[in-house]
Length: 226
Image (tube, rainbow, N blue to C red; front, side, top):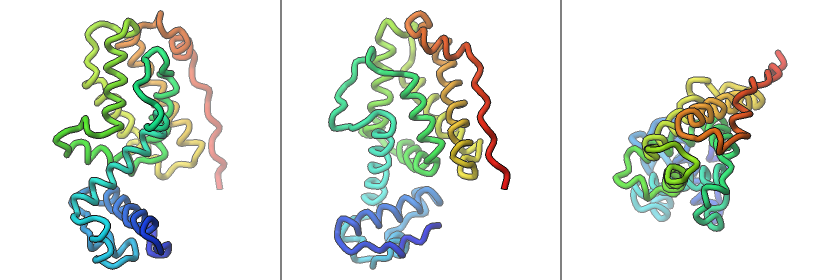
């Protein structure tokens, strides 16, 4: 685990970020049950009293950490949450959004694990910005004439995200080179699009994606052997 103490913060904003970074590391490693304010403070290189000044309880620290992860996912997949608003489904590039999600998952498997664990434990998943936008965008799609009839947006959202977050674990993305992660992310996005195209998307409404899926993926250059 990275020694966060080497980068000990000297101001309140940096101190808060150091604490959150330590919490993210512990959450990714041990899950919510493995997080305590004392251990987080030790890893962040601050005393326990300082940690309590920023986060009164362990629960508030975990909540703040999950919120940070959700915002980062949102920005990576959808863009700036302050300016995006509710997008019209006709304006959404579904292929690009799927590619972005797949690549974020490949590059950040630990963050995705943190987010998923917290969402599963939440009594109100719709309070999470990323889930609200993701499920909401699929619901708007399901209500449009671009979708097949009777698409269950909630179930489809869970299936897509579960696949996106489990594939990097199966493919051992943490042990891969960047180029290999790009290729693995592309493979995931391709099959997600294929499942949607022939399950929920009308191919006549998405000719570019239908054409893409009709082509085999180009082989990705193998990483140089050391």
